[in-house]
Length: 182
Image (cartoon, rainbow, N blue to C red; front, side):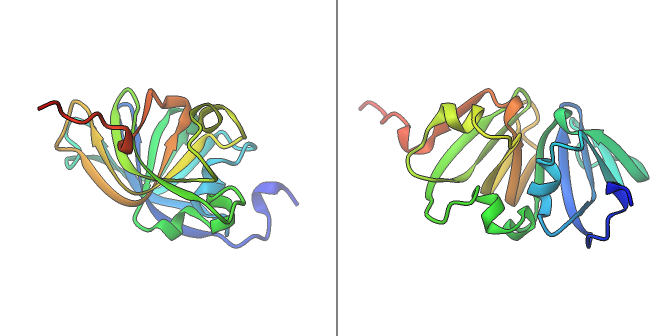
């Protein structure tokens, strides 16, 4: 029996995937590890999105095509937006195995998008370990809003968003905003 035909149970999750040029809305087949398991699986570098609707970023609501299956390279994906936090996967996987976490309101930018939401991290915020440690290429944010930098009309509010950490330019803690001078 090959790995691709394993007896694991699969279910479909509605996803909104954003690349540098396109928005793909469809269904991602996941196991009981949820979207985190699918996106951070090191044995597969590509994804299949079922019932995929494609739109260009500059006209995010205008459908340009509809496919039964679209295949994508994970490294080209900037963000995966999910309707519910639970769709990310079991808490142990999403939180990296930690039970006690601290919530950090953050703004993350990529070359195309700004994402503002909450990150849950064990202990204090450590930028270098967040971006370099571990094997997870996609990091979770909760109750987040994604906005295209050059196209502010493209706005996605989501219970859970996975951000490709290889595409991250800036991470800013919202609690570190400078106070306006009077």
